[in-house]
Length: 253
Ligand code: G3P
Ligand code: MG
Image 1 (cartoon, protein in one colour):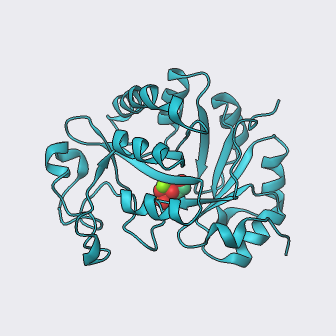
Image 2 (cartoon, rainbow, N blue to C red):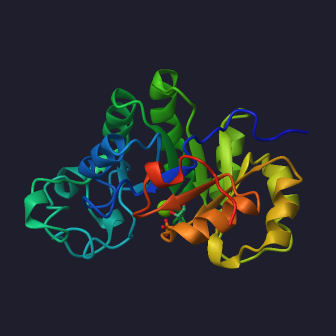
């Protein structure tokens, strides 16, 4: 069975949290930079606000990437939207705000970008976040060139996502090697394995590729490492700073 027929990432690089070396991560500015640089795919992270809106931010805590303090889940969207999500990166981006998933998806399809939406799991919130993400996706996916790829480190999140949709493309995120990855991927019908490149070797790459899945590796910021990964069969890398023009052709080392 081929699992990845619908997932083609060309050029074989995904802007991790947007082009986060040039603009604050997970903001519209970072997605705009990615578009300008020739990316066709961006990855970003989502979680719930207190009033169950889906917001685009990586950390559960506000303090690293905004001028707020405390947990994202403790504040309503109306407050989160007032925070400065750019000055920590550069004062030129003080206008940047935390965006909702809805806003980001509209922005992405206007810029012909495809989305890897990483859902951050949180105990007690998984059902609601998946429900909310799918409600938004149902309104937006028809606009996209390629359907979004949903990924998560949380098994319950992936299971709930599969229950919501038989067709949605799921990526199995693996930060540490899991012996039962194939069983889990089969049960979830994942089209991709999204794996920390530091735990990847040729043997593991081949074991994944032989199942017909796409193999995506994060977070790869070194060109020669990216080329080595491609030579092992990796289909695309998530990067903070490598550019599509450097990686438009997969080359072997
Ligand atoms: O989805 C790949 C990568 O984003 C997973 O790790 O912590 O950067 O969200 P993290
Ligand atoms: Mg992520």
